[in-house]
Image (cartoon, rainbow, N blue to C red; front, side):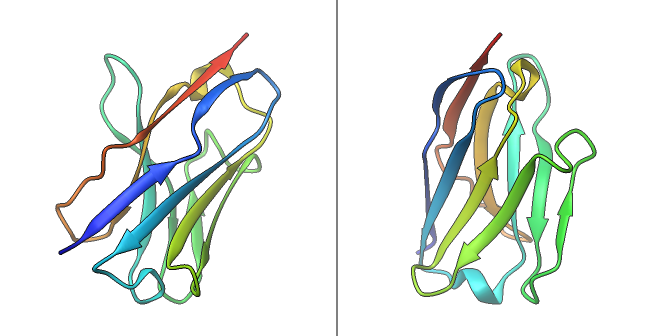
Length: 113
């Protein structure tokens, strides 16, 4: 049974940093394309970053140069390092297995101005 547990969110001032974690079970992170999505109030869920099973990364224009997606194969965990945070980054962040309908509970990120 697939399970993804996101953590690491919180309240941070603009310009600050957070690192999100996504602990996976029932699936091998390194063998799948994995992604981070986010959803702000009143908005649709949007793709933030993607890492393929070969390690290629892709980022939304809004976060390029500020966010970094990575994984720890030994811990079977996906990460999102977020630097230079802006108030518009405020959202619930979710990790996702590409092609799998499962969504975790997400982790709230709030950036104050």
